[in-house]
Image (tube, rainbow, N blue to C red; front, top):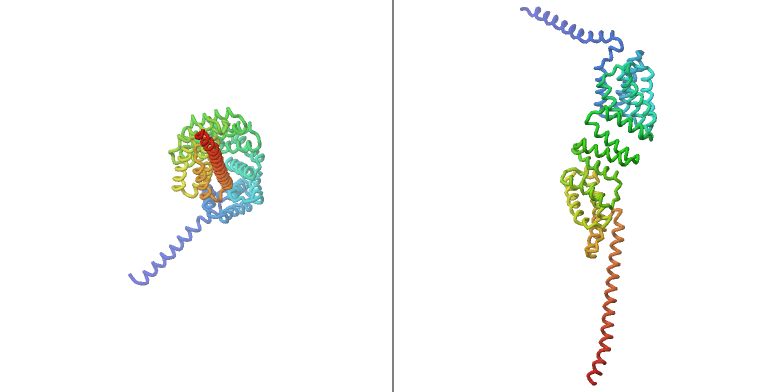
Length: 424
């Protein structure tokens, strides 16, 4: 085979590869150029832009995604597509609202979507939902309520094309938020009605939280018996609710508070002891909230169980402070609990305690917590004890003086009498 033949074949292969490469890139471009605007922006394209916005690591990049979408919408003459582009632009902006101007901008985008009256229920409902959310976050519950109720009306309309599963999921999502908005508006009855609707459509995993919110609202409205019944139903029907993360302890404390027990009463203290004994050996740090309230209650009525219980709580606090992260110590106020317990121990009054022992406790608190707000009271109490000891010392000295004077007077009278008696 000659060298010229080889060179010719190589050239043919080279030009064929160039042609194939050009066709590979040109055909998709030709197809895309001949597509209608709606065909260009497929669901896959919108998904890719949403993912790009979600993966953006800073506000500037997320805003770029929103501005890109908004610019595309400005150049679009197809109402359906324009509405969808504006909807996504508003969605991208939503998480970046930092002031009134940002709020107005996003609000205008979503309102423009509604004016275009798109046929896609998902776009309309998504727009209304985000309008409700931004108005609620901006402290405008009345307008948020309007948007949420419009969502409910559309979902329950017989003319929509929404599947039952989608409708149930959407209602499950908005009903708790609508109830909160109505409660903020002062419409307690309306909020309770919406919570009942939420219980009807929600999955079992969500019903416990709805019951909890219902119980809290009933308690806030002064409906004590109904609130207590709601709490009891929650604890009975959803026995695992809040146990994994320890929040069940807070819910039980809420139940105790709804009872309106006097904080020095046996009922209040017995209720706290019940919670403490049930969870004291668990690793949940919420138990120290119970411990704090219980120690304060025992201290406030000079209960003889205080000293024994305070030592148990002090030991558990010491271990928790040693083994937990700084974040958890702050989150559950463990240092504050330690300081308040130390204050109660220092100030605890018991007639059986020696005054010097009381002074030692006060000095210990002053040394350990010199900058605490209660330190001045501890110092005042220490000064009181010092003055009391000084007064008692003066009284003892005066008592002994009176005794010796009386004794000397008695001796002085006795000796002459004794001498006269002997002479007689």
